[in-house]
Image (cartoon, rainbow, N blue to C red; front, top):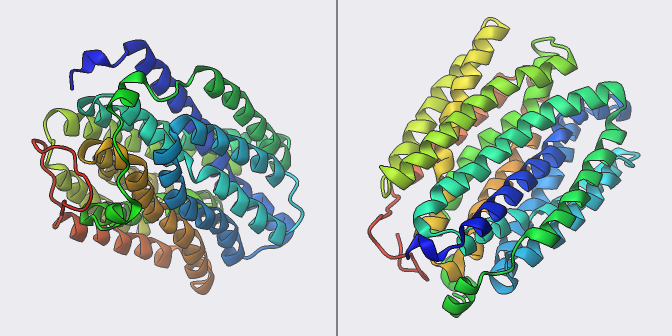
Length: 406
């Protein structure tokens, strides 16, 4: 497809709006990882209970990945993005009103229901407005937005909690979501005329489930997400409880590893569009190996600077594996895009459900030591390596439909 048939202004608007909305999304989501320190003290929670609060969001988030992807294929990206943003913004505000452990579990579960359709819908919005040869870089930019959102959440959340408390922080973040709701409603285009003219019958959900490539992508994303969500959930507590840093300083120190992740995402996204199409599995394997070595070294780090250095390396390695997020946009057909992305993200969010609680449990049984938690993350990165050995993509092939890909 000649990229000139895609409107340049529309592409810019879509990418800018989605980039900023992903930042807000991660601020709403990741701020809990900082707030849980104060919440745990206020409600007298142990590490396992704290992990359960974080995991309750991801359980709902994972469930909605499968449903949200199918809904996006059926109704288009804009409708699903707007509905998702309304619901998650409401429950971000409600989080500030939480009064107990149980209320937090319920509110964060409903919050996850709201956010769960957004990843698939945003990927479909890219596919609706970008030619295939540009989608790797476009998706890479959105992946970068998640890291910027994580950085922003760490810093802003730490500052706001110190100044006005965790309750007010969630009120403010929820209000910000409604501002972006209005912007997306006004400026995000419906399905482009190009896509209306080319629209084909949707591939059935069952046929997508039969596609082995979809399941391989899910497994790869599960492994890397165990590390991403495990670290983002427990690193603030690690810096405070193990390395004895002040809360605000944890927000500042968290910037550097994420910056290395951003660098890796940028490099890998450029590579798969320019020089490494069809060879994505090698990037995933190399990134996973870097992550394994770096996390092992982090466990034995003798000082804060050494631990920070090794964590930067770990984030760089896992950042390279984020190329998996662009593969559905490059190797699956338009009509099955949302469903396929939903299956892949289901694996990632199941990791988000498992990692915080399981890491909290290992921290509890090891009497506050994080060695068991880091070992869990190391083992998780074996999954992308093994799965990638069986991953087959072909940059010269047509986009994959139904269940004919391995």
